Length: 288
Picture 1 (cartoon, helix red, strand yellow):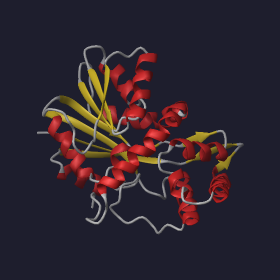
Picture 2: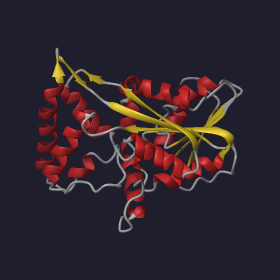
Picture 3: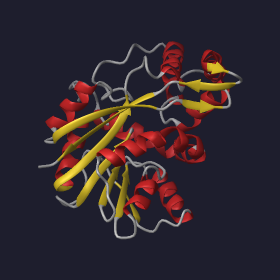
Picture 4: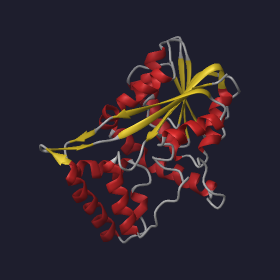
């Protein structure tokens, strides 16, 4: 299942998501060197599976602070273009600054809900979403919108995390924070990093949106940082919604929760540095 149950409040979730990214945008941009290095293999796989070529017009949904937008913009060259969309105006502001700073002139940005793209049909050659779409309340609807705005024979590539077991840094953090906040386990079908992590779920979602010739690829991309404490700090500052998990706790308990996260993540330190296995899935298809 790729859409939450009827009782799930989509509108409230989107409002919260927008506000979280408005607050976390600066930190996501500040941590860009680490994030870029970590997610570079995912971006490369998306470019390959979407068959992005020089001169293409590309749509990046839930684009964030400029990656993979800028990398794709360089790939398509001056005859191509990339439209970066996101629900957060703040994070798109950082995307614009990054494109300008790196001398990439073929990028434009628009604040937009990925489940209701304000774009004419058959406007793009390719469409991508790196991690962001997995957090949408209705992934099939968002994929359907990407299908609508693609030209015939246009291709899509989206990425998400595979499973909690294959991504221990994320699993450890979520387990500690949920326990501290006394939250029940997340129900199946809810938005989240693993919502399209199973190849069958990925294929079903792409197929339900109308895509054909669907393929998936698993990408192993370890997260490497100086220390477990650095990883904990990055997640607290840059991963929108993580700190909100314990936002209802008194300040002293909130700090204790993140201290526990840092300690728990030390099991992933080796040789004086932090290294966590992480695994992603890229799903791709074509509009016929």
